[in-house]
Length: 420
Image 1 (cartoon, rainbow, N blue to C red):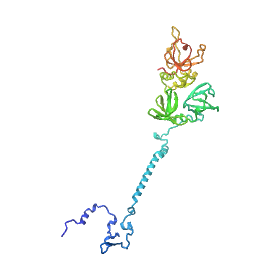
Image 2 (cartoon, rainbow, N blue to C red):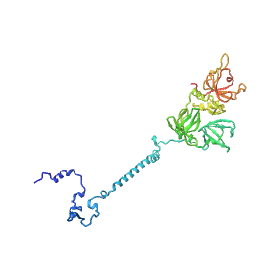
Image 3 (cartoon, one colour):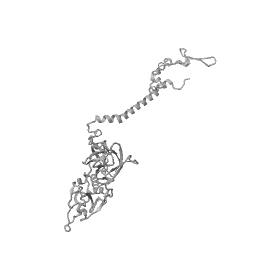
């Protein structure tokens, strides 16, 4: 009886075009490929158990050549190939990753600038560094401030004072702890050798991003941006340079090396080579008033000990006017103010003296008409002067009016700031 089932050969022929391409060994029968056919090689005993199973050459379980017997390539016949490929792939990826890191952070930064040298591409334009203090005679003050003495000993007369990070020129050394220096504005005197460093990197403008001028009486420089310890105090008119600006703080370069942090309040930020703009007299007066009741010190320029000429010097500098340090030099600056006189009484009209005007006075013991300057005062308001207290211990505000002894002692009045 014929079966109704479809012929397997016909069925396979229908799907033949869709079958996966077979390997060459599939095109040959088993016997042609040398495949051991169990049905031909098994011998059974009388009890039905398998008696023997041998290959054609009589050897049981002999090793087979996978390439000859099964038609497999070396790659297909290797069992542990996959593990070795994974290790190789991992090492290759790691090598590529390390090469990219080296390229980004080491190779490119060193070769790209040279490649684009002289181009107008902003990224590769090399900043031009013009050194201002590369002469070996330059030094930098590394103390908060330092007195300039007339002679090389502690109880000598004080000429003036230099500030933190201020460049000076070395003149000579007495080998006894003092050396002679010359300031950039021409003051010559003796300072302690220990207050100087020959490392001028902290004052070179082109090595930094920001120029900072201290406008408060003093500021703290700290080891960290927050919760740091005190490195030093810097005084009004100190100029320091910074490279990093964050919200409310700057990282500044310190004389002798290292960095510190300073708050942005009471600090004027400029470009490294910019100068301060000149402002009106009211800003000058506002700066002066921060020294009211400060301790008086002859020719001092800081809140720790200050003179009127020292206050005029630092307050003028931070408000855009380059001012000498000494009274005699200051008396030659600006415009002379001439007082008018009352037509009836003949007394000076003090309202002609405006806030910000600087008065130079002779000594109370001097003869009328003497031109020798004894002291200095600054008008802060009509009829009010900032001057040395009678006991010469502090600087204070003093009221005056026409006919007072002060008006009779005036040698000259100078106006350096516009009254607007």
